[in-house]
Each structure stands twice: as C-alpha cells, then as structure tokens.
Image (cartoon, rainbow, N blue to C red; front, top):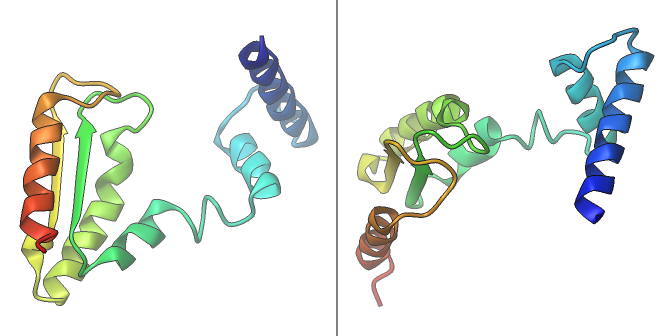
Amino acid sequence: MWVLTYQRYHLFVLSEAGSDLGKNEIDKEVVEKVWDRIAPGLASQFDSPYTVPVIAPRPLLILNGEEDPRCPIAGLVIPMSSVRKACADADCPLNFKVIAQAGIGHQMTPLMVNEASNWFDRFLKV
C-alpha cells in the first residue's frame, strides 16, 4: 500500500510541477525542477560527473549490468571519462576498472562477486 501511495504522490508532484511550467507532459525539465526544489544541487554539483572523479587516485571498481534499467551504463560515460583522466593524471590508471556484464540487468552476479573479491584482495592488503 505504501509503495502505491508513494507512486501516486510522486506522480502528483511531477504533474503539479509540469502545470507550473505550462506543460501537459512530464519531461526532463519538469523532473529537474522537482529535484532542484527537493534537493538543490543534486543534479548539478553533487551528480556523478562531479563526485566520482574526485575518488581518484583511490581505487574504484564499478560493476554494472549492461542492461540495468535503474542504473543505465550510458549514465556512466561522462564520469568514466573523467575518472580515467584523473587516474592517468595521478599516474595510477590501473586503479579504475568498469565491468558492464552483458545480458544482465539490475542484479549482482557470481562474476561480479568474484571481480569484487579480486579487487579487494588487490587493494585492501593488510
């Protein structure tokens, strides 16, 4: 019941924001307006293109399903490019790795668990 109520509320908020903008449909501008009101800066200064690159030169492994509808790999294109550059500038290009497993959606697979384990073994030495 809570999920259904939340979904209706979310749709209501987006619809009202669209009305404020004189729009009949929910589009990118409407969603941005709502998020800028709820959490200012979330889609700008705190979004992944700005925050992920500052992890370098610390090791970063990204594991993702290539077909993940919740975390689409296309959303990582800009952050991946920035992190690769930051790691190269810090002379540690091997501290960054991305695995987008083909045919996988929003789930953790045995391959991902194995890759994470190997990554931890490599970088979290005692």
